[in-house]
Image (cartoon, rainbow, N blue to C red; front, top):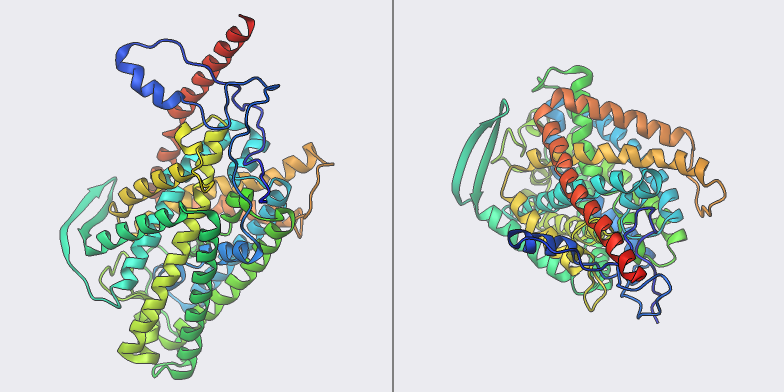
Length: 526
């Protein structure tokens, strides 16, 4: 029989038993009803109740599935696309490779800290749980809101759009039905709608539906797709080094002009682009409530997974620069060259020719799908945990007969669909990464707070290199955040603005909790 486990740690502000909210005037009734319906774990019983236990998440993800979630969610579209954007920022192969390396070390440092926190608190929600236990429910809610509104849905949208880009290399489709350039907040936003967007929407809903059929099926799908993508990248890397007709180590000495002001700010912007390709190192703890033997498997999966990703990314980028001169890399697919082939496809063309490049593009579609599947599976657990704590719409806290949060998955898919047709690949990634790193830095500070506050709490794994590792992470993360505000104020403003939109929802939910508590106490007294 599968072990049942609580899907969240009890927070200090966890809502108590629910009763009906007091009467409301007619035009507010439906709105308040939607916000105030109890989530499944919020029964109408007192703490001493013997009522039937509510359904909980099932621990059905073993070590291979957890490792595949780590590797497969990180390796998506970024490594095949972002090198072009980074090269445009810094102008040389050496600086581009250094930006990749620095972003990788920073992500590894974060994963080492999350390994400690995830093993200590193996419950659904990831950073939401870490922040709730460290700073309280308000900060945790704002993270969860950002994750749902920007991080999760934005990532899913980006993976689906990236998959559509690569699929067009296998099955040509270039129809654009609507296209417009908007000048907003001092920047140009290029918007288009066509067959690529339709393909992206189909992909989002197909894999969201699949993940509603059970976490075990989602984990097996992830393991398969991750294996395929690693094999595909190996074919590209070794094929490029062995067969490229333009390959030469002299390409590493070339340089081009940059698109920005250069210097430290440009390097920071390049690192931010690379961090999108590494984004996903934090996802596994979100699904910690469904990992078998989490105290052991979460640290192992995060550490071994990051080691695999670092090796894969290093090999892939060395292959790109070996096969292509800098002038070819900076003109690959990006916001500045929306109709150009991705840098990975350009490199494959030099080794395999047109037919071989199509085969590799098909394999890259599978890579994008793997990242999308992992993102759908893990990210839906954050709003689920919030709803179980009474801080988000109760619909998100319900489990279907397969014991997965189907409501959260489908709502996530709907919002991701909106984002998928709202902007270009790079515009989406800019505000996803910025908004996420605000809370990554805050979550990592939790390792200091909790070691001091709870020195005797069980810690199956302790972060390697503590306290240097978390301090390094926090320092570089803060530098990236301020650098982004200075160099990309529009994207930073969008990220901060979306976080602020969560404040009214938090106040509404807090007000409902207070009313429910009063109603329950009144009921008990009578």
